[in-house]
Length: 366
Image (cartoon, rainbow, N blue to C red):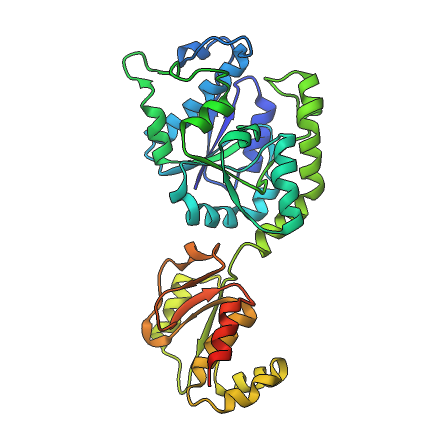
């Protein structure tokens, strides 16, 4: 996934920091519009709450979106230049998996909000329950403001391009009434969701001052959310990495010999995955140690693999695929599910550990 970061020409110090943080990512700098030249690129309604710098923010984001559109990108993560990527650095792969699993449901996914409302209604909840969720950016959830970071896909870019006047070479957003700050226009114009985990945080807003908001606004509105995310960032990382995904484990069972083609394809398509290779002897040893109540049940089964496939995924999580099926390409997009079954015979399925449906299948074996 490409990353575009928005940066004012005069903010060379921020540019240096962002370039350093993004050195291992596929990124592009987007030069921001300022309070003096934004009218060259966007036409918006007058409103007393809209200041030249906030209007320039709208223009800058529209420019970033159009750049991604013109470059032919299918999706892009757009961020501003006052963010700390410490959380994202540790959860980049998980964010992409979550996005790929749910992007059909939306045009934009907001991955951060520097609002007290977001902290109270999203971030506190995930710390209490440990469960990831996404909510629609409608009603009260528009109060989860912030264009600090969001992913937008091609359909969202196309929605904005409908407002672009080719002759004037600028966007006309006057059809939107009210306070046309970027937080509202961006998220209302598209089908938008926000996730209840912050994948990024801003830098200390007292130390890295805003180019848009007043110092009073920073102290009252941004400092508390920043401090909260900073305080609990390791918990957020832990939840993202350990509580939202089916583990990358492939369980293989063999009776006489491993299918070499099947084995090599796993290595080819899933090189970073862990392989658990079992046979009847190792299965018996495992059951005697961890599930002694199941020993008699296992001994009474002629087809030991039928028992193995449920107990291995139940205990460890991961995926089971019978060797004669051949490897399934593209199963990583299902990692954010609790469980996925690919056919009625359960010869290919995956899930997180301790799923009740797997326990039922085990107890149903005679």
